[in-house]
Length: 344
Image (cartoon, rainbow, N blue to C red; front, side, top):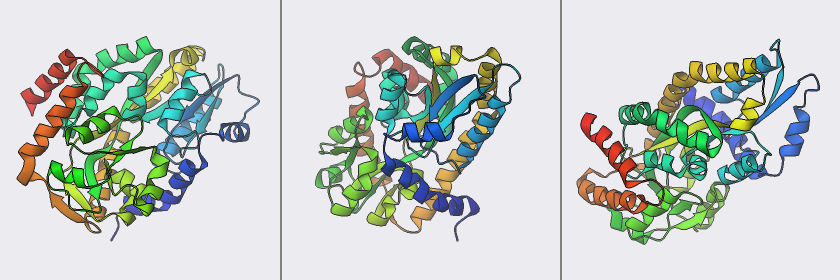
């Protein structure tokens, strides 16, 4: 029987899918619907999370609070459910001033600050304690990098552990050469992993994946269980790997100039609200991914990768070393390796 959290997630699937199918050209419609003539300032934030999710509801509360500030009320316009487009589109809209901030996964974050993708380097960080440790130790450095790029990193988030889902049995890296894996457009870490395995991926945006699975254009996806279940990709797949590997990293960022233009009370409220709920949402996301994995394990055949662990580790090592010097420095990679290796 589905847990309460997973029943709730299943109810949100149509909304989440609809958001992506709508695409990136509906900003003006949503903006006009949420216009508040009484607000003196505005802040436009995009997220893939549906409005009815815990995260979506938290931002609706924040929107209400910002509009009620005694000094310089702010109208927070939320483009939730993916209506602002995929992450590449959202980043482009932030750069040209059509959006002020967003909740992004590593794909969008890497477009702003490539060095942050060291957190997503294949096989490097594979547990939540390790990720927490690395972000605590290197957090100030990442804050400075985002600051230099013109953004304030408000808070971190996670979207679950990475697994390989397929129509076929994937046990060894060479098995990826026999299938058609999806490569998320704009994800250099995913591409590097596929190439290190000697495979040829099919590059496309996230909204195209479901139809590609239907037609057989792709038959394998690398994703978290949350994503696979939410987008119903599992209905076109047969296997999932265990244990979970790397972690899909996310963060909440806002353009510095847009944040600075808000009243100080609003700036402080945004930062304090994010800090207050950060741990709650991280733990909630991790719990939801665990429950999603359990649901999928009851519907798909689990494939254990431990038998070929050394082969997978070799591919991961090759991929992350290939990215060193391109996305992140070799010295940064070594620092993360030292943190992970020392404690885990």
